[in-house]
Image 1 (cartoon, rainbow, N blue to C red):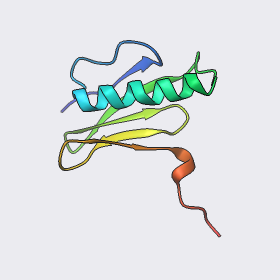
Image 2 (cartoon, rainbow, N blue to C red):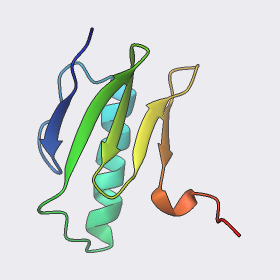
Image 3 (cartoon, rainbow, N blue to C red):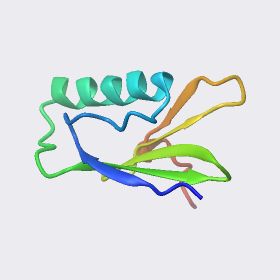
Length: 83
């Protein structure tokens, strides 16, 4: 069993986080900073689903690895709209 963890936006990501996900986290944080979003109280949550890491930001942005090991970012705005 793997336990998850939390860290602040701009903080040091967990050492066990795959490099592809670390890069994706940094990219999301850079985009938010470029948009002047106040993330001072936001954090990331790392959990594991079936042994695979999933990272979620407090705004709903999530990052997971695809089968090839590439990080996939899903923004909350990308969710399909309901009629």
